[in-house]
Length: 242
Image 1: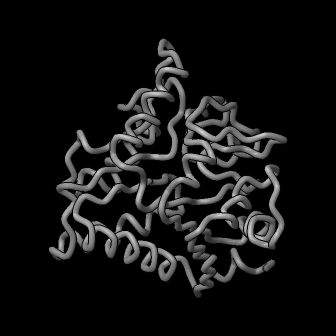
Image 2: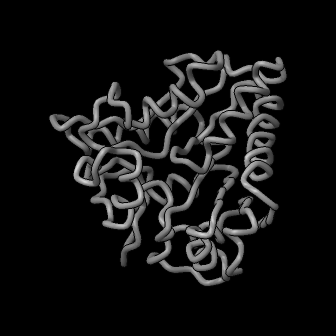
């Protein structure tokens, strides 16, 4: 594990963007696993700048997002479809058909949606680089702390801590969907390289629990310590308890 402690959010975002850009420069048809939330926003903003500078080309890149709320239409302003459009897809030359987000309406069969999503990852040749954030309870994607974790993409009931944390993006906590589709830990661990980002004091406990040398399904991110090539980039506030 490559642990990088940086001074601030901006430096964390720069390292993350350069890592993604470097892969795309070396492999035109790179397959990226992408995350949402406030943590990677700076990374996406810098990637857009690098693209506008003419240094990277997304024309042949394929992407797979970690997760999406169940029952939230792609057009909903708080859907992860809209998040990705706002922060990256609308600003670069990526082909819409090359982007995949595990959408599941209230009428869809979650098992079918999950199986199809896993199959698309396999057909793409697997994920070259998976970008991750980390929840305050140590979740990655929407893999919540539990006695057992699912390996492949699956339906999940969101933990109260996660719903509360995500309520800042909605008008009220009651508007936050209670279910989501998420890549499983096996899907995430299957990526050839992983980069996890964490910023701020509110992530310090999760970072300590995840990267202290102990592994537990009660802290899903801790399983990343077993990955063959993982880079953890945290600012000094997030690393304050290490």
